[in-house]
Length: 416
Ligand code: AMP
Ligand code: GLY
View 1 (tube, protein in one colour):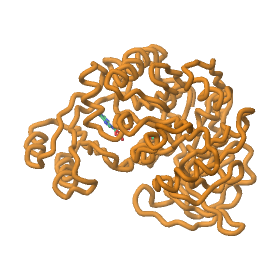
View 2 (cartoon, rainbow, N blue to C red):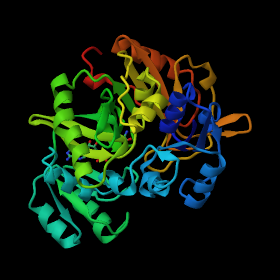
View 3 (cartoon, rainbow, N blue to C red):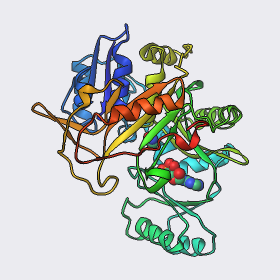
View 4 (spheres, rainbow, N blue to C red):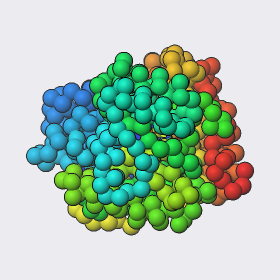
């Protein structure tokens, strides 16, 4: 099989890593890729959003399977583009992607099919939203309905900040002209529940926990994710089972009923509340850094799994039960303004796996090229072993412009 992965981050590096050893693989391509991916796949300097160029590329290279990484490609309709072609895309159609790309749609769906989530109201009128929020008690949760590159959610105890957010979204129209939702604040521990899905067939993955805030003890601004742990001791088996039967299964069925049947990686961003698990958000693609951790744990051939799933056959999946810990090294300044082009050395000394998230190769030198730059992964039979390994390896990396959290996994593990 000839496979094409779309994207340039750690998630796509992990996907290529998982695909590269398959007996079923002929050629592995990635557009646009990164220096880590270049070591294991053919990378091509093309824009995946240029559909005409992409279509031509797929024909020339006889691509059988496309795996899009980012939601941006899915929202652009990359799956729909190959609807009547022999090439299969393991990703949802533009319409099914709305579970991520329209928070208003996702909320309607959950409300209609009784899928537990925060109660909410939607607004497109600035003044109405201001009047409503003034009469609410904090903390306030305000979400832009469309894709906003991870910047579309504000959670704040401060009414002034909440009103300012509404102004940015509905009056200044910083992200576009979409609606916003204001929703109930949920309290509890968050976790990521990801599944491989094709129509009504679901293969659940182990749960993982992202660390979105930039700083230790979950302080500072939200990021795309600063680190990841799996398993997560503090999320009970009962919560996971309930999440599967009360959230994942009904959502997949609901999407089928709505004529938006889902193919790809379905990502439930969930929270364990006193009333049981609830949905914070859905994503229509693999999480990043969830992919780096979960695909490293997967001991079943990914390509066989996807191929069988597309024929509605379930492959028994084997996951390493060890503790896996991933720590993101991000550029100083991220998630706000940051500089690029700082030299990185020492990655060739690492004894544990690592993934390129935002790097570039300039002649013989590896340089920073994004907000999140590298993810270093460690594992072990205990959490402490995984943690010690990961942080020992990280010290081998030298770069004057990187920052990382030193407490990944601490809050959710029994032993620290
Ligand atoms: P999202 O981009 O939707 O995942 O939201 C970013 C972060 O905001 C989540 O990981 C949560 O920590 C927080 N958040 C979103 N919605 C809520 C909510 N209803 N209650 C509490 N926290 C929330
Ligand atoms: N790790 C969070 C995300 O991929 O959205």
